[in-house]
Image 1 (tube, rainbow, N blue to C red):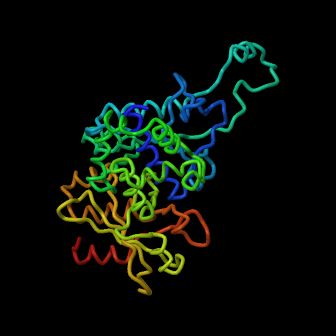
Image 2 (tube, helix red, strand yellow):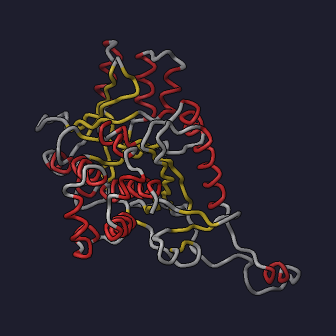
Length: 363
C-alpha cells in the first residue's frame, strides 16, 4: 500500500459510511457487470469502453417508480489541491460510459439476420441509472463547480463538514508515516477501510488495528474526528434532483427529529448568511404548534441554484422566488430521523412564512 492508496481508501471509507449513516446501502457485486478484484478489495463496474474502479457505489433507501432504479457512484479524490474541471469532466464521461453499456455478442449480431429469431437481442439483466458524483478532501475550482452544476454532478468536499485541521492530516500521510507503521498494521488498515460488511466496525479481526488507531495521530485522528460528526449528518433530495448534505451543529440529529414528535407537520424555513451566501441553514419545526425548538441543519446551497441567484445580484426578492421554486419540498434520508420506520421524512417549505417575508421585505 502506498501513501496515495491510503489517502484514497480513507476518503472512500468516510464517504461510504457517511452515505450508510443516511440510509444508503453498499451495492453487492453480481460477479459479472459489477465484480470484485480478487485480493485487492477493489470493485469494478463495466462500461462501454472499459471496466472502471468503483470507489464508492451505493443504493439509495428508496427507488422512484416508473423508471430504472438508481445507484450513486462517488469518485474519490484525495489530492492536496483544488479539484479542477478535468476531474469533473471525467466524471461526466464515466456516467455516460456505464449508463450506455450493453452487451451485444457476435452471436446476437448474426441472429439479427433472422427476422424470426425467438430471443431478444439484449442481455437479460436488471438495468440501473447511475449517478456519478465527485468527493474530495479539498474544495473545487469555480469552473469545476459550474460544469458540475450544468451537468447535475453531485460534489462533496470534506472541508464542508470536517475541521480544517482534520483535512490537513490527509496530506501528512507520506512514505515516512507508512514506514513507521508495521507491515501487519498496514495490511489490516487497508483491509478494514475496504471492508464493506455491516459488522466491520465490531469485528474481532480488527482488534489489534483498533487499539493502534486509538493513539495514532494521523489516520486514527481522522477516523476519530469523523466519528464525532457522522451522526450529525442527513442527506436531503430536492425535487430538482439536487443532493443536499445537511449537518447539525450538535450531536445526534436523530434525537432532534424525535423531539419533534416523530414527524407531524414538519415545515422548513431557510436562512442564509449575508457574509457568505453559499452557506444556508434549514430550520425544521412544527411551526404552527411551536412544541419544540427548530432542528437547524447547515448546508452548501447547490451551486447551480446559487449561480441562478447570482444573475440577480443576490437580490433578496429573487432569493424568495428561488426558495419557493426549488425548496418547496425536501426529502430527508435517514432512518434515525424518519417517522414510523420509513427511510425518509418529507419536509415542506413554510409557505406562509415565505409570503410574510415577501410582504415585509426581509431576508
